[in-house]
Image (cartoon, rainbow, N blue to C red; front, side, top):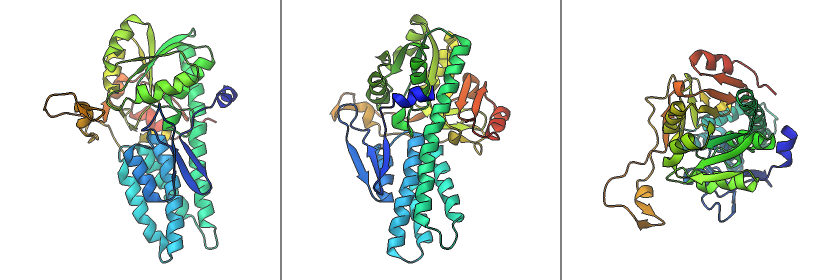
Amino acid sequence: MREQLLAVEKVQAIEWREGALYALDQRLLPHRQTWLRFETAAEVADAIGDGVVRGAPAIGIAAAYALVLGARARLALGGDWREALEADFARLAHVRPMAVNLSWALQRMRERLMRLKDGDDMLALLEAEAVGIHLSDREANLTMAQLGIELIRKHQGNPQVLLTHGNAGALATGGFGTALGVIRAAYLDDLLEHVYVDETRPELHGARLTAWELAGDGVPVSLNVDAAAAHLMKTKGITWVVVGAECIAANGDVVNTIGTYQLAVNAMHHGVRMMVVAPSSSIDMSLEDAEDMRLEERDGRELLEVAGHRVATDVPAVNPLFDVTPADLVDYIVTEKGIVERPDSTKLAQLMCRKRLH
């Protein structure tokens, strides 16, 4: 399966070459594929904040490369470069606080800095660490893809109808994707009959990004409005909802793109299994549960306007970016360390003590 996925890899969102970070501008997809070059930590932070780079794993990877750029600039200026680099750490940490992979990647880079010895080539070692974070995420996705299709085969075996929400594909990761990695693998292994993609209002990540990725791979895919999900579960034989995660709390609560919670509720009612696919770096064991988290909200104008034109009456708009799916609505969490069925605090603690499977 790994070789099959490698053979069909088409989409990349981040590239590191010539001492700079290149990112595919996801704000312009699917109509334009524009690559932007970033040479400073501040530019990368702005790219994350503006949505050029998105998806929790991809944000963490980009932040790691940003620190390489920051360290290079601080060294060139002279003086106490370590102290000066703290400003880059701080700026990156606050640009997307909900993305646990971001803090995880920053901590890995900090730990690498702390291990430096006199005479070490600091920039080369930091670059190697960032590249390692990138490649590690890509390998984790390959492992999760295999584990995910093993679950599908175990429970059904014949080609399945799946539904996904948001974008947890190659565009949001170091390659292949988390949820979309499983869907791609299911298609290659003849386990997928069809996949339905929620348009995922208001940013339309399902319509603009996920449908584009899957169609490009030849996967049989249809787009639907978010409000049609329950109807499709009832009428189209959907057996699995497969999604990614922005953050997973220690008890198994899942923070993900707004609309995931209602999908989980509908899935339980219709007997549809709920699979959350995310690397272990998305699990925050310091967060007991996610119910009291302060979730990010976006500008209400996204709901009130279309292409800059007002389409709603003059009322306030509530526009949350994420919601919390309680752990008791999740059937499986799939990570590169293994699978957790019916997640709870004990099972996730045991998972996080494991080494990576492959």
